[in-house]
Amino acid sequence: MSTIRESLELWEKESLSEYATLSMNSKGRLKEEPQCDIRPVFQRDRDRILHSKSFRRLKDKTQVFLTPEGDHYRTRLTHTLEVSQNARTIAKALRLNEDLVEAIALGHDLGHTPFGHAGERALDEICPLGFDHSKQSLRMVDVLEKDGLGLNLTMEVRDGILNHQTSGSPFTLEGKIVRLSDKIAYIHHDMDDAIRGGILTEDDVPISIREVIGYTTGERLDHFIHDTVTFSGGRNDILMSDEVWKAMKELREFMFERVYMNPDVKSEERKAESLMKTLYEYYLKHLDRLPKEYLQMINMGESRDRVACDYVASMTDRYAIALYEELFIPKSWPTARY
Image 1 (cartoon, rainbow, N blue to C red):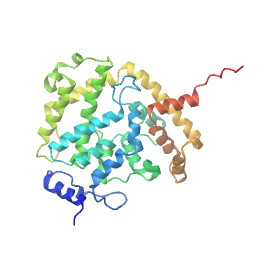
Image 2: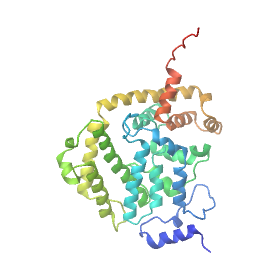
Image 3: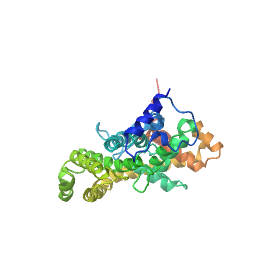
Image 4: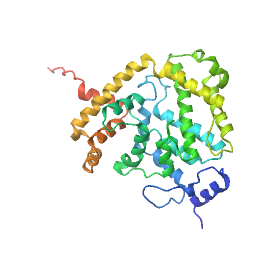
């Protein structure tokens, strides 16, 4: 008698596109382990990521605006969820593997630092080994989670996480969907947050872009997804039309000029970079202050630079600020009691 998992694998084979990555054809894991009787391998990976500590920490990590006080600004967690939703919509329409897409999407930013790309730049500059959040996301699921045991994800999910940036080249269509969905998501929600924060208005967006892909953030998001589905259908690739791809690139350039390089935003980022470098240097000099699981990695041969970088990169914005204040900001002397 077949298991529920085997029945679901058969459903995938009969129902999904010829270009889909089937669970039964997975390239496997770094370490072999028994199959689940209920869940196919990519669903199992999704669950492991969702229950991980690094996933929970995303709720207090910056997307663009550093530790915003408003209730409705995106965090790294809400960005991740929007990437996942966009990717699942595209995958379902193309009859590709939704479980694989969701696992990659939920895991793609697990290695991000506090304070967004400002934190990433700081660690890349100060750590002799360099720092890249895509590689760190893979290191998170391979090494750092579960006190050094890692999550032991499938090769397909690992590849999608590592190659989710524009420069990456995932070997599955599901990985390519996440790579594009990440770009669609941040262009959409970063503009929405910039408008909310008073940095720009909808009318600031060049009319040549708006005429092609829409006059509101919602219209543009809908246009991006429909265009991707239309031009990827029946093909062994994930594509946009030339016209929409050009407009999206122009919109991204506009966002870099008006938002990501905005002097008001950059001034706070410089403070965040200084904080990150100071914490890194502190833990490199005071390794005994690292949590025991990080000390254990050093004892097992990991580089001190890498382990100090791992710890600082794993922090949330709030924890990094609180720790900095505890270590480097003088405390007031308590009032004497009479």
